Length: 270
Length: 214
Image (cartoon, rainbow over the protein chains, first blue to last red):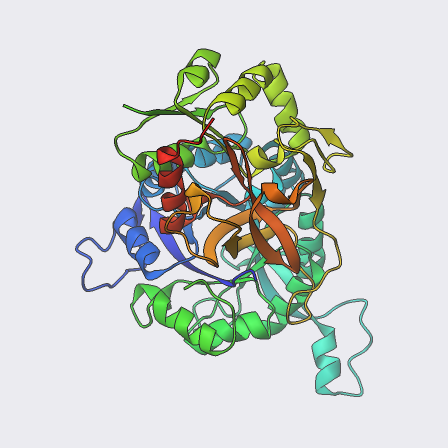
């Protein structure tokens, strides 16, 4: 049976891993190659890199990082952040990325996803969705008489850009469906309400998207402990779980996380 | 020094395969090429591919690589990977039916929509991620790779060989499908050995040592 995946995510700025990775035995905590190698050894199923470099001129740095990592680490690599043109995608794939994730460029021009999938194949096009809960769906039935089921049924989420500051008016579930119609081969879903909170994934959001699309969904945003990972898979129906800080700060190793998931009856690669 | 040529026809990420082969055996000379001379001179040939089958067949035809590929597949250890496996069969359902190379008898079919996984959820397509591979028989490429080893997959179509004896491994995704084929000096895998960590490197190392009896 297909294993559920655990994906550590590294934020990279000018070729250096930021948001502090704290492994005692790593000499250079900012070196993406060294950190990737460590995650690979621990049993990561994939590694995600998010390029947070602000200036467009420094995009080349990320390409070099991918090249170096791909030369040493033989598991799938997903790279996102600032992917705006077919040329950006081509360069990352040629450098050794297996998938690229497209976020704000898809919101700005949804056809970009179509063009990318046609040119490179859906298997390497991930659409990253940053969603935030905004209240009932306009077409939903009125939320009374009040009941938990009703409130749940009326919840809706909207796509936000600019790190969760800018609303777009796009409904997250409809957007995910549309992106898959346009050729997205996978959805990387981040709850902007939960990101950085360590309170766990937004499970309703994760499940709503996962049940709405035929492609795999990676849950992201809010992981604070191992139970959160299991919840994302069992209750959120995610195909993969992405986390940063719990692994970076060595609160848990990936091996421990997999042991925990296996004990909960989830198929993992060990 | 032994040499391996990776057929470059503009489909997909050849860098990873080249690096993985080099890593599997630092002594081997790895060339990524669309030059018929380089391909036919190499001791071994790797035929990779990602994307859609029609584009793949068009790209091969445009570069006049089909006869070269057939000649290589008839004469030396030949490894098809992912779309490079599917292209070896007679035809594929993808793109409203596409004629393929016909080097291994059989067809390529899409995973059936609407299937469910073990817990009753809808089965996701593409089949993406790590899954177990059960080798059928003791082909030299499985040396040191046990039953149920994990390999990385990304695909929506899979091979349906006509002959059972060509099945070199199976994998379960709702139902079992042929995840590797062996046919004379051709070996073909649906998964990505170059992305399957130590086990994948082991398979590539086995390929680089393989000397099929002609």
